[in-house]
Length: 221
Image (cartoon, rainbow, N blue to C red):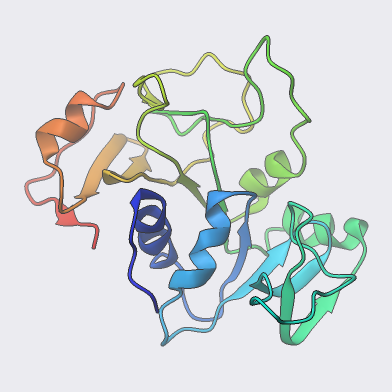
């Protein structure tokens, strides 16, 4: 397993440690696909894409033949592991809605203190559509959000109450950023871990909601 070299890889490396042996995990478009590079060597995880495939292992290496018929959720070519399978979209969303996905990992515009997720559109800006995210965050046993702690303007992406159009209501279990791991609980968001390069005070200052701070806060890496 490679060592993380930048903020995005730190987020992916920590997120991958949530996965357990035998899990079926859905990785969303973008940063979540980096998790494939950081799977602990002692566990066996199956990755699926809602377009109808289980057993994705990531893009082919340079020089390898490019699969003609296997793509991830973002439409990029992907390799498949031995034992993988493909099927139609109807069956795919059948097992997603049936609660058979152990964890789904996706990005966000905002997550609020109640675990509400907004990740598909910002009013006034063009949006391609919600896709399968609504089904995934509702049907998966665990929802993990990978995101930078703040947006490009420095505004917190973890807020007290989001006013953006929702993807899911009370669905987020964990938020992993380059600064922290935050567990969304019925009592409120708990700061469970921080990056080795930050402090609790910095995380609190850059978070737009009140955090529950336990006596002992762990280290992400």
